[in-house]
Amino acid sequence: MFKKFSSEDVSSQNQVKASVQRKIRQSIAEEYPGLEPVLDDLLPKKVPLIVVKCQNHLNLVLVNSVPLFFNIRDGPYMPTLRLLHQYPNIMKKFQVDRGAIKFVLAGANIMCPGLTSPGGALDDEVEAETPVAIMAEGKQHALAIGFNKMSAKDIKAINKGIGVDNMHYLNDGLWKMERLE
Image (cartoon, rainbow, N blue to C red; front, top):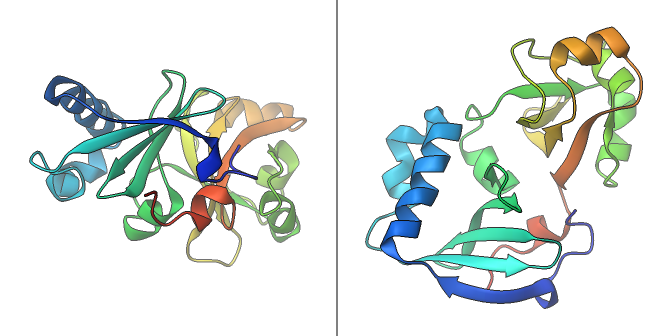
């Protein structure tokens, strides 16, 4: 998704009204209850919230020119990896085995066998169509953020095909864009 992302992909930047800002805060609070204590620090009420519209129906949420969340069309908001590294426990986690790491870092989707092999791990409570953090075997921080295509139980049962769509990974265009001016 963000493989070749740059500031040229931005269509428009808009400072949102207070009502829209409340809706964004509310949906983020519902999606990530672990962020509730720090939500006022992340998305302060007095600081203008800017929504950046990009190509492919992508929206970025910026505070002080720093991208914090993104979503596609009207889907759920997902944190950027920089934010996830600051608050690692806000998302459900899947772990890929060592063999899958280089492919995930190249932007490939996460296949079921990479999650179900001995080095992989699944959180059984995860349903389909849910954002998840992709961890790497033997590593501390997340290497990608993905969107589940099937539930964890289905991934274990079927064990074929794409299990998680890779949305944002280390060293992609969004990762390199620390600030958007």
